[in-house]
Amino acid sequence: MRALVTGGAGFIGCNLTAALVRGGHEVTVVDNLSRPGSLRNLQVLLEDPVAAQKVSFHPVDVRDADGLAAVVADHRPDAVAHLAGQVAVTDSVTHPLVDFDINARGTLHVLEAVRRHAPEARVLFTSTNKVYGGLKQHRTERTPTRYVLPDHPDGVSESFPTLAATPYGCSKLTADLYVQDYAATYSMATTVFRMSCIYGKWQNGTVDQGWVSWLVKSALLGNPITIYGDGLQVRDLLHVDDLIAAVLSVLEDGRGAGEVFNIGGGVDYSLSIWAEFGALLAELAAGEPPVTYEPWRTGDQHVYISDIAKAREQLGWRPRRAPRDGIAEMTEWLRIEQKRSR
Image (cartoon, rainbow, N blue to C red; front, side, top):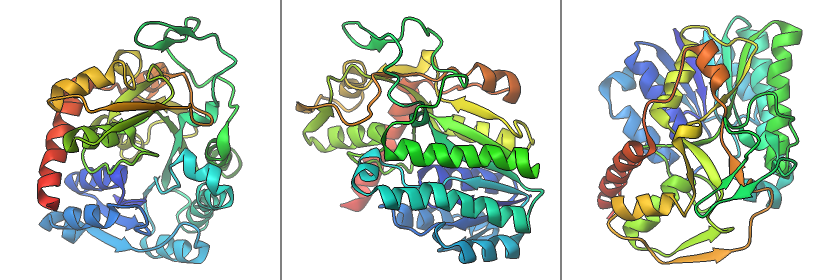
């Protein structure tokens, strides 16, 4: 199979590219290398002699419609994973036009390039839970360690209304809808993953995005941590290896064409971001760093947990790596990376 991965030097992109190479596929990576750590990720990926033979790299921005079309026309992929995007809610609030150009217009560029030059390709787009907005219309209760949605014990399903909040949620929802429409209008095999919190190796989290990685790195360095809100807000965590398994079910097996799936750890793999995650972090990182609290951020959800029943039924997929095991593995990887950077 010939695969194309936009954002292929990013956290998820590098993990996916490595998995595709292990599966014997040829991979075209498209990435503008703008995110911190992406060049390092690409270098580490290509240190593998097999990957060096199987992977071709193109430093193209998804906002460059002509450049992107040229790559697709040249490689004629059988499968496309569109992972490239502006990923921080905070940056979208500060720079909404840039956010729209990357997430919405950039996705349309990908779809058009594939429609014109590789119309039979399977296309997977990584959307976000932020398309559901702040979920403030749903009853929330507070317990000593977390918020809960008592009327939705299995989490948020794909049938929930899309009431995107923040420019980031709006730009991703725009892209999400276009991906769905290209299946309906042009009969393309497109699939949408609305993802929750993904974590694992090669993640270079910042205070604005990738909070699991950011908090672990801060704890290992002994840096103070700022929690926005009260720390009881809940997310379901999904290890990147489990995500890649779901992605491959689409790209390799052709499952889920024309469908939208909520992809996350589900109820069993959910944690509040500090009351529960902080206790686990203190155990794994040998000590809890000092913590300060700041006001809630715009559009932050008190609770988001993916209802993954549809993915389980239609993709034959479920998460397997529990947060304790996955975060322990990532903690050791970050320790090694910090030693290398000294």
